Image (cartoon, rainbow, N blue to C red; front, side, top):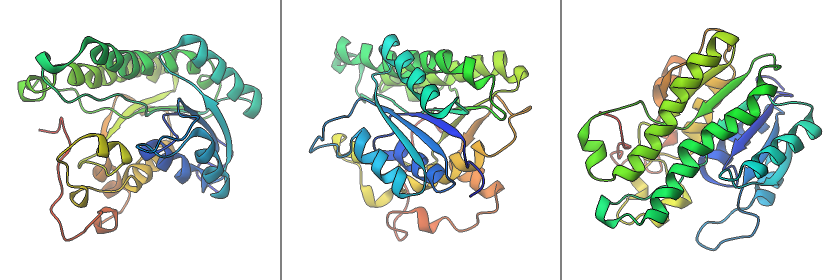
Length: 272
């Protein structure tokens, strides 16, 4: 029991995919995990609920609190944070993992989808940070880690899917702003992004991506763990890449993270 033992992590979208992988890695240390997500009923296309995630977390050695929470709704976020504090006594870490995606051009993006992405990605990350920060400021080594790319104004990332790029870059700029405001107060506010596309169930909703050319969520989980166990003091405003973080931690062989090590890897979006 070390690293994140006894720490309380509030993770949005932790019922599956990268969010769940980060939760399970922290659980192995003996962390407390708040599974804040919308999925309370099983979906054949996207398996996993807040309850199945909580079961896996506890089986891995952590403590879990499953909270149905739509991060677009301020009242639900406030209730989830209040439940977390009542259960575990505080919050040490916020992981802004929840995100909505729609990879289409302007003429093929319904405004309902556009609004969903802005509300979940940038606004949701800001709201969760705003509600968690009073508790984070009381924590011994507070972190906010947002799954967002390095900010980019390269038109090639905007032309194909302006709505999604705006939503993800919104998360990046929220990170930049909060780092500037709360980094001097001792809160580590940073972003983490994968070098390659990550194989999650959500990819099944996006046609044409070869899963065998992806890495597994474990690489993001290990990278997040390396970030979240660092001292928060003076560590803010960084846009980190998963394999760079792990290389700095001494990892030299990345083949175990590949779905199929014999295949070339697909680079993720937003990395020039």
